[in-house]
Length: 276
Image (cartoon, helix red, strand yellow):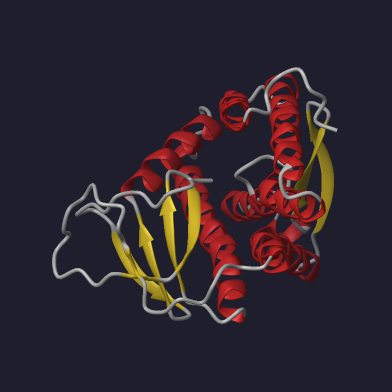
């Protein structure tokens, strides 16, 4: 959800997955814990729920960014991954090699090993779609495991928003930790993957809408994508607080709608003209 790579810190976690360098900023864990606290409530298994939530969030967002990174690699480019404040970035290029942590406020973290030219619109669409797509495939695999165990997936509603609910088979019905694991895996990899496909910039759906609209009209299409982002973001913010009682949805999508409107103002497209 970020547009720029966050600064390095001495507390970053660094490793590699499938040849992609991965960096986890400490804010990722902090925000994840805060959201876990709000979701765990006053359950007697509060600690276990929090750990399960944090691990599933980490794995799910990492897989989301791996989807982007694998598609970038498919088009002949290198990539690295950064997880930050419950969001993630798959960034084209390789990170610089640091013998120390260097300047923690520097954003100059990509070593330009080669110049491959700009991405085509269709490449950008495929790269943007790959993140939510791989999450939905993971959710399908998780559902398959659940059915193989003799369980099933039912639909419940948060307000009037549908949400998947795992039902364990009778022999496992009392395993609360396993139930929470399936619940978190399905919720994050279905609900948040679909949310990420909403046409709100800079989310993946917003990037896809931007490419589709600018292919038709390079200047007017960018304005239409921003207007679409404003209206959709505002609608999701209202839906989140009314239907789901989620202040997180209100703040996140409200701020994205405002950001898109400010971008329109800078383009001179926020006046009284119809965007369509």
